[in-house]
Amino acid sequence: MSGYHRPIMVEEVLDGLRIRAGGIYFDGTAGGGGHSFAILASDPAVRLIATDKDGDAIRETQERLSPFAGRFWLFRTDFKNFAQVLEEAGVEELDGYLLDLGISSHQIDTRERGFAYMSYHAPLDMRMDDREPLTAKDVVNGYSEEALVRILREYGEETFAESIVRNIVRERANKEIATCGALRAVIEESVPAKYRYNACARKTFQAIRIEVNGELTGLKECIEGLTRRLKTGGRACILTFHSLEDRIVKNVFRSMSEGCTCPKSFPVCVCGKKREVVLVNKKPLTASAEEQRENPRSTSAKLRIAERVHEQAAARIH
Image 1 (cartoon, one colour):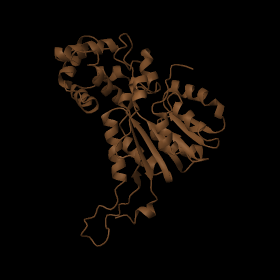
Image 2: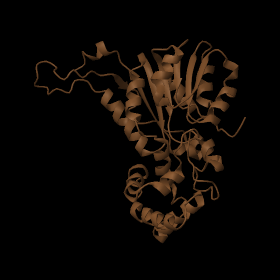
Image 3: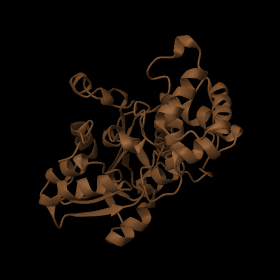
């Protein structure tokens, strides 16, 4: 096997999905196939649909799931294309789905792919899907100053966005910023001395990566759509690793868990809103202390779980 790590919070995910015998499950972010393997191994009749837009992930997952031949479908595509994937698989409803959002350990550790600010000589790439044309180098060297400031603020929550972007614009006017190390040097020069620690480039790299891969674009609509594909009692499990993702998941689940919003003074409901899910865990689950010690990357993981409620039953909830 290649350098894919053990999936994060695998036991918590399996408990959250509450696997049904013979059920059909969707793993939208297969990665190295760790969660997919655990789902298929949990019941001899379970079937799985898995997607990932990273070619390395697809190859790894295909090999890892080979013992379960005939029980899984694997597609190289963005999980946001779930409707097309389910149609191709001939599946209308799911017993559960998992999204493990963000970047994988393998992507970070494969330095030539340019995801990590530690990869000094790596090209600025950051594409999860190398078939896509837009790279981090294109963003850094081609976006306007205003657009870069917006990206760093919105996707990186970077306090020093204006200073960093000002220096990026100055530097690229003289020479193209083409490597992770060159971008990191600009960032370190742009922040006050007391903030120039090893990870001071993390927020900028995160922001650019999210822009390159469109990670947050359409995420809300995708979660809503996938959740509505669940059978009654089916479970949605979503792992997030930073506040931007988690906020979207939290807000979608909360909105879908709310029923009628009419004022209590109204004799009958006129809004027509029905409760679509119940929250299995109102606060996100986190990795155990033992897992966090063994895998520091699990420390930022948050798992939110929601269960599908039948709409006709939901209509009676006021």
